[in-house]
Length: 94
Image 1 (tube, rainbow, N blue to C red):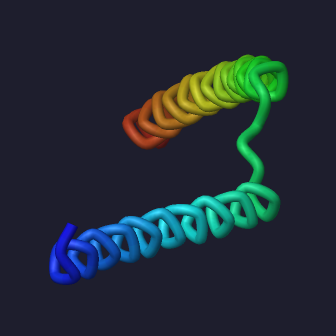
Image 2 (tube, rainbow, N blue to C red):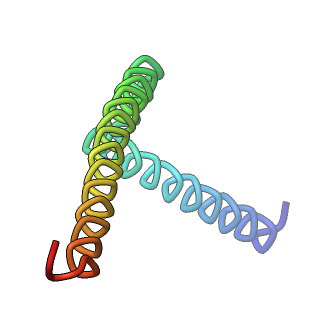
């Protein structure tokens, strides 16, 4: 192998080593990031889904109750308007 070929091979090896060192550094940084913001294990995800479903059930029940009250209020307002109209229309001598 000529000195030029040997120098070229050494340059290629140094470049490869630099790329590998860069990959190792990125993996270390990713590992540190994983320690800071760990991915939730599957059982935690299932618990979260269960909690979300339960929250939706509670929300739905509360919305139904609120709508029932709104409908009752609407019916009461309609009855009050009907009675008011009847009083206004009724002749004064009744």
